[in-house]
Image (cartoon, helix red, strand yellow):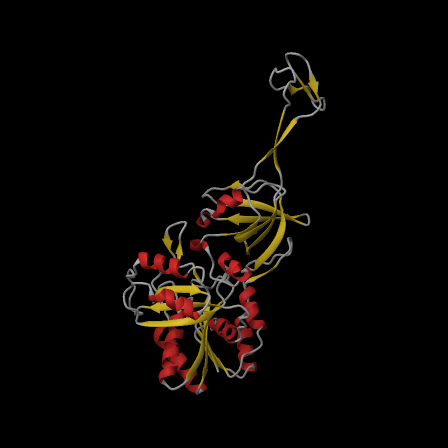
Length: 407
């Protein structure tokens, strides 16, 4: 059976993965065999999300009615049902449904009525609380298809704890140093920031992301912290770029995430707040791309682009612009400086002789029809560039994974 749970948290606390971990423990104690725990990230642009838009799916053998009731009891006990925007859903199916709904929930938007209809068609046991919006994520989780996966080790404190977490930052830097590139995004080295310890009032103590259960477990074992009350390793679609689809300028849908190739059409513009705006042209259609202030040093790359550079961008189309997650530099345009030519008689630079008349030396009247054109060196190197870990979305594939695949 596959058990899906979603939308149990709120800005005030709780975490759906925590309820998933509690369910794994509960099922094991009841004699069920838990085969896998999945953490499924869905469309990061859904306006109803609390934080990272995560659902969970537990794959197990055992009594489906018991599992359904146990999941519902945990939601009743732990979900923040007092919050207006918390609308949990639980779904239990005997076999994986068609994955089409998962891919739409990952890359587009789905409706509650459709999730209910699919639950009934699949013969699922299901329950929605309040408006039942969590049924979308819960059904998407049990329908999930993961051709590429990563792992996350999650350590939890008690659900009642809402204060500052006691986790030693130095041990986290040391853990990533020892396990990188097989784990990533625990810290942001360039900005000197710990990334894997949340600051929100939820039960997560810390989370380690990596290529396999073994690597994330090794890294987690090196971290010094207050004793966790519960731990769980999830198989996940995080860090896979699964939300990205090919895009074309003029045919981008609000809230979807795209990969789009084009040519830089104008010099980047720095806006108020340090945000950088870039115009990309694709088949004669212009698209605005944005690198926001939280992307820190990534903005320096965007600032260095000039008209004629050929690039590929990845990011979400929101509010009339692509919010950049990654950029690939494919071809670099020459950058030149045009100045009046030097006088051959050594009298310095000539001046314009008038529109279309070339250049003339004011002292000796020598003329030249052509300006001096000088190529400037460019430090930009073709290849992939990404936002730093502090600005990275859960689903975005870090470049270290691309390098691992190419080796």
